[in-house]
Length: 300
Image 1 (spheres, rainbow, N blue to C red):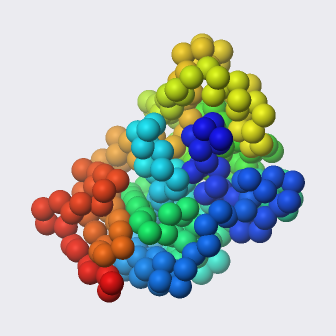
Image 2 (image 1 turned 120 degrees about the vertical axis):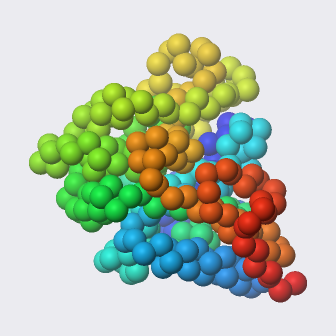
């Protein structure tokens, strides 16, 4: 149970809406959203859409929070690419998700409301939006809308805690990072090898976040949890209880360095308010506004 909760946010965020009976622990949502919670989250999604429309751009890297991973110093779990001209609808999020009914990763275009509703804690929520420079935004948009490329970069096997520089497995955030590599590294889309993307990321200083595991027992227990694997990680990392995994903060840090003109907007909500923060200083899990932030009251 502890190991499942460690990687649960990344895993649950990547699952398809339909449940697969073979792995109910992962493919069934444990929380039934109430009408009040749904209304609150939809209002939060509307605030996110307002920021996207206000950006004047056509693409944004988007991430959301999932389960409580505070013991591992992680808040955000799942990233995707929001596209103004997405065939799935304006500002729908193109992302990797795990199709429970097919037991395989798929490419999924999801409306922003559904993306936000996918969080596991509707009583609170966190979303970040990254708006690259005009040139780099256009490059990312072209790569994301290049469906053959986006599909070719999907790994054959999904793992919530996939090693960031391995091709045996893949998680949601890893797919985003590898697509960024093809977009900004000007890699040939006719040769969409994931290893080439990872080599470019490494050369550019992409540093996958080392997720600290509390005990070796937890690593051992993970061998018996569906969709979680450690056999792709270097043994030194396993022994050190530090698995290098692509998470949204890894992508954010890389984008900030690779594209200094990128603008960042973070939105969060609790049961009483929505906070909109524009800047690189993180809000934190408690959703406390910083000076100059916009605060939108939610009806009790």
